[in-house]
Image 1 (cartoon, rainbow, N blue to C red):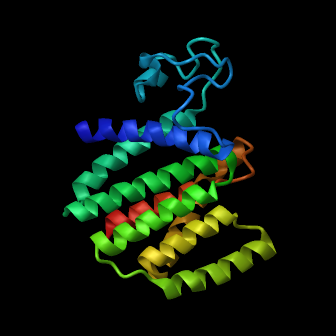
Image 2: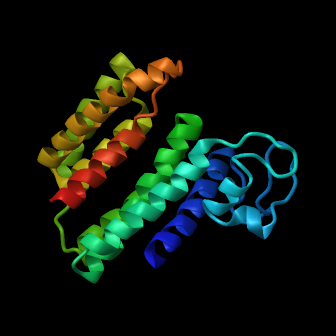
Length: 226
């Protein structure tokens, strides 16, 4: 239960980061507030999951409807934090899995909010994850796989516009950390998950699909599976 609660707090903070950073706003000031009425939120409003539920998914002050993504991010963060503690057999593996969770959740939320990512923030996360993988987990970085993936997918993206640059950035990082074979599995599983949910997206007339959440789901499923 404690791991879940800590995860929801992390998820709430990452939601703030994903919302503010692409807008070039500080993540420190001003305080958390409603973007519609600008009213500062009270402590009860900021409690993960509970604040959203008590206010029935609306701002307590102006009654503006809030995005369900806010609640989803906190629930996913809490659930996956429990998985990280449960499946990690060493301290270094736990650090890496929690870092990977923070990375995937942050940029999945960015993709859902804006259909784009903030590349400087992505680069900082990518360097940190690569360092954790190399120095803590003693894993070899797959530079050849990363370069090959970059050359293929950036060209494919520029010619077909079927992948966003953020999607390709994540694919290149996956190739660097896990190699070409695991990357192929991630792509296949992510596409399968996307196809499974496409009827729902089509019903709600969502034509621009945020693909990073699917890549992140596939990455975590395979990471914990193996």
